[in-house]
Length: 202
Image (cartoon, rainbow, N blue to C red; front, top):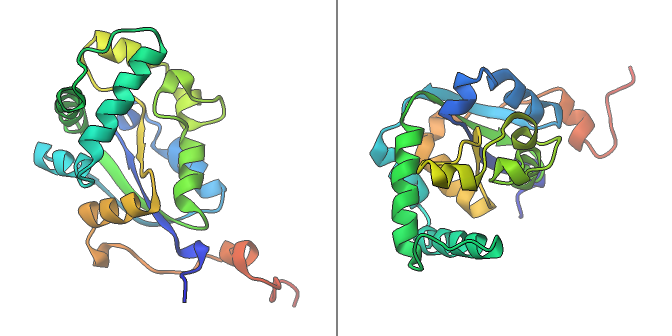
């Protein structure tokens, strides 16, 4: 039997810039108030090896990200730093490792219906400059790819959020042991998922 959508999980990481800007509570509140349930959380300073593994869990990540980056440059009428997607992602990876190990991060697992898509929608698109107002990145960051490229650094966008259900499953296993994820009930789940809303009236 197919798992109910309410059991879908996704990984969210509040990056070092989110912590340094004291946005932990604000970020968590955005996911919580839509009805998602926090089932795991921890603060840590990741190692460069852990971050490299995170970004390369999908063996296609280097190629896909490189190609997307090249296309992004060309769409803006700019010349990409290289036409080789692997050369571009090698640089992205180095900058990512520097950024993600610069200070503590908070890794979290959120659970709920369509968790992956809902979290992505609330978080906003990867580049803060083009993120819609009302999203975390659109409301709290003014960084852009152009500025991060000019400064030769990783774009500062506060949060990492898994891009697909498969990606979420791989990333959650990379950051959390099974016993660190807690199964429990929230009262509000009755309102969100109970078919007949039984039990509201005495």
